[in-house]
Length: 137
Image (cartoon, one colour):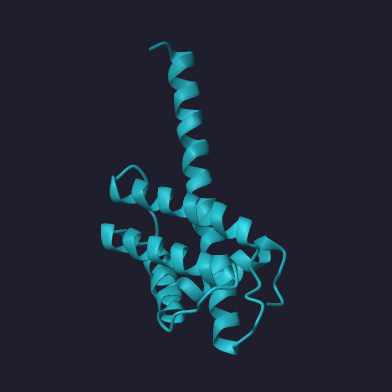
């Protein structure tokens, strides 16, 4: 591998890692919006279903990158954390489409945010909301 190819590969990896971080930040933001709406009992859960699908898929990928040891975050991500996030993705998608809101959805949301950011999940969620351009929710 030439120095130029090595530099390109390093830049690609840096971009991929940055993208993974953003995916997780957006995921905690959307999950927080969902959890707050659930807690208030809002009819509108406040998250665009397409944004949810794209973000949750990306967050699951990023979490698997943690599990594989290719990236690191504020805490260690386990396979169980990824499975919990997949469950949130599935039941959240159904709720956003107007379907059933299982009682576990709120607690599952909190657990998933904790799996991404540990006890600091609420601060991370607030910062994500500012990045999403919706600090008032």
